[in-house]
Amino acid sequence: LKITAYGVRELEEPYFNRLNTAGFDLKFVRDLLTHDNVAEAADADAVLVRGNCVVDRQNLAKFADWGIKAVFTRSVGFNHMDLQAAADLNIAMARVPGYSPYAVAELAFTLGMSLFRHVNLAVNQTRQADFTIGKALFSKEIHTATVGIMGAGRIGLTEAKLYQGLGAHVLGYDPYPSPAAKAAIELVDLPTLLAQSDIVSIHVPYFPGKNDNLADADFIAQMKPGAVLINTARGELASVPAVLAGLKSGQLSGYGADVILDEVAILGKKFPRLEDLPNPEVRQLLAAYPQVLITPHVGSYTEPALEDMIRISYENFQEFFATGQTANAIQA
Ligand code: COI
Image 1 (tube, rainbow, N blue to C red):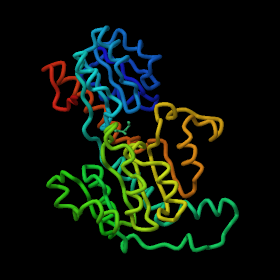
Image 2: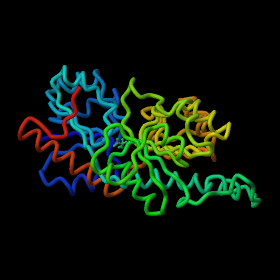
Image 3: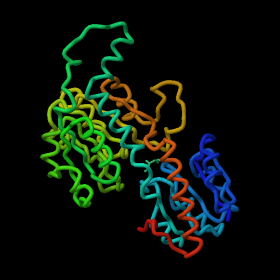
Image 4: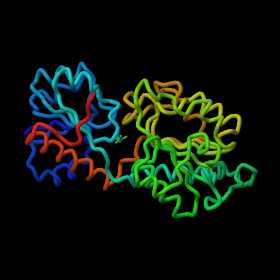
């Protein structure tokens, strides 16, 4: 069974090979799937992608022409997959519903703590030989603070546990809370979570056209003055103008994000200067450093998460080619 896997970094290849106990015939493509490199899959039986691969109708139509029946993603999020086009073309889609939840949770937590203790401001100051200690560096302690987890799934609950370990009071909001969520955290409505939390961390899926700009001006206005907002889910979930206005007014003291808008055009590339970034809102956000900390979507870039992504993807392919279905199917 020939599988073309897109977006496989050199570092990842040994993991793909070591975990390939089923003996798949693998072809690795370094770049994410685009309209330009789609032909790398021309002789494949199946395709494996990751987030930010362009899995649109145009590319899916080519896959269908080449007889490809399965296009699976090794990400949790599947907002990059055109599910309707896949259904129309009789291509099966599946995802990895979860990998080590510590991967994203630890990064969200680290960004949150860094901003909460003003490490961003302090380090930026000392780098400029400024050792004064102004009001902006004065901090609470996390065990006296409240953290709001929006989206109490596996990642959100793992982050909750990390904060609880430090003695923080953790609130959660989730419209469909699992028994695990009910057992682990105090579930409240969203206005309560926003009003009481010193750090709000977003862990909800992005549904294009449905929850864009979830963290908008109204959301930020409902937050506790001076709170920190963390987004490790998808860039589209936070309104950049609202975040920047919140930072300017002091309503927000910091914004930490592992995700940005236009990742397809930006991730994996090195631009000569900030001004060369193709998206003006991303430029504005980065220019707001040190109040804003942005990482290049590396939440899941850990060894345990990588191993889970690969192993579960292989299981998805094995199940699909044995039975015609997978438990991890995603459908329009
Ligand atoms: C996801 O799993 O949804 C991610 O954001 C990780 C990345 C490989 C796209």
